[in-house]
Length: 404
Image 1: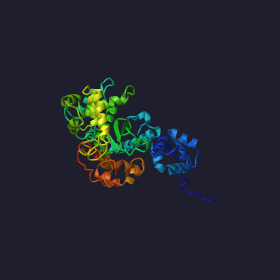
Image 2: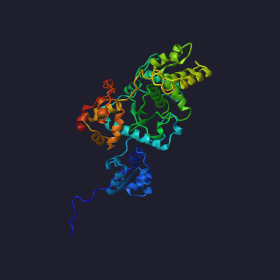
Image 3: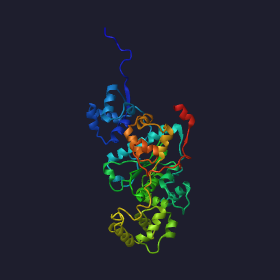
């Protein structure tokens, strides 16, 4: 008689549709490709992705994991970050392919999963960004946010990303793929967390400090004004919010030059951290420029060349070397404080629902802490760090000890 092993076969596995989608979409794979690689029909794979969860035999779960390049533990982890397509906001959304939007959803869930896993061990920054009433104008909304962040109406915001991070906004530099490198697809925003109560801004790495600041301010406008409202000209409202946030209207009127030229606008650019193009538009929208003047200034930006770079000023404005492009650090600071500075990316993945190490490295590679750069294997001496977030993130020592 053949002996029966005491340990038996491996148990069945409950796989979650959202985890299958995240593993596929973050890699921009097609469902048919995954089905073929897993040795199953495309229709059955589609049913798996659209189901909340499905219990499958171990060998089938392993085949899915092999086809997707993610561990079984990832596919069998209950989803905790409820970001969905349609919740993302960004410029030129109508021209964005659904596959690109789906990929950003998966990146957002990665950030949400990391913050969710870290939260029991830390006291995270309190959210200081108010959700303004639907009837409030973009100008008044920006003033309310400025006040909540501790800035007066006539005070420049020197480092916008660091200011927002202290106010509980998570910012992630994400290497957008494919068509997302097109014009206007610089940033997006959404809400993460189990209760969708933590704001996230995703930005594409850029060496243009002016564009980075405007994109972040624009997405902050969406977060403050458009969490539940989808009607109206949302993009115009977000732009008006961003311009008011960076340079309030009463200051703009007071400091606007009598003779408006590109040269006379440069001092405003340096002080308030806005591009010349944004200043031109800000002035025009508020009656400080005639239409013909606006058109003339835009033509000068398009036709003139920067003497240092040789590029047209519309691409590389004067003053492009005056500042370093802002980069975030809060996501990395949270991860390091929660899980320890001696972790590898693989070990961090074990802590964060078995996300793959290469995606964690990519995420942390856009953060400017020394630990993040070390774990992502990217050496960048210009990524200076500071302790300015230490007072808003505190380690919960009791939770940390219990987790060891």
